Image 1 (tube, rainbow, N blue to C red):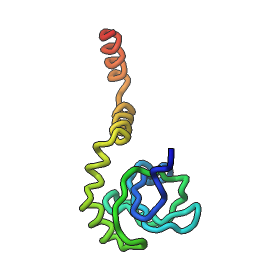
Image 2: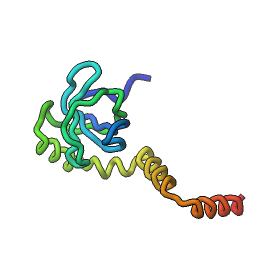
Image 3: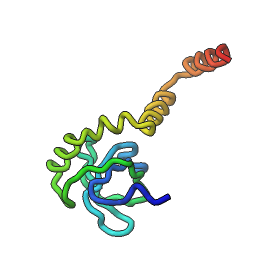
Length: 120
């Protein structure tokens, strides 16, 4: 099966490491084989370089020229409704469920186990 997600200008990715972990960013420019310039205009991620092994590429891509300013990237991001499309994916739903489960207290976990055992 051929590759579907390429490292290219406009590709949307999720940061997997560092202080911006879990946030959506757009690739603005490819610096070399291991680094890219990213910008997260709507997720409050400043424009900076990041290693490719710190990113998870998504299937979404927006159209803008490489090394575009943040205002142009923000307009393309909003026009293509990336946040809405991302929220509808199974990947985003799994991340949200994992965060919700991490927020449970001991008593909530007990109630969940109890309800699950009664169901079976």
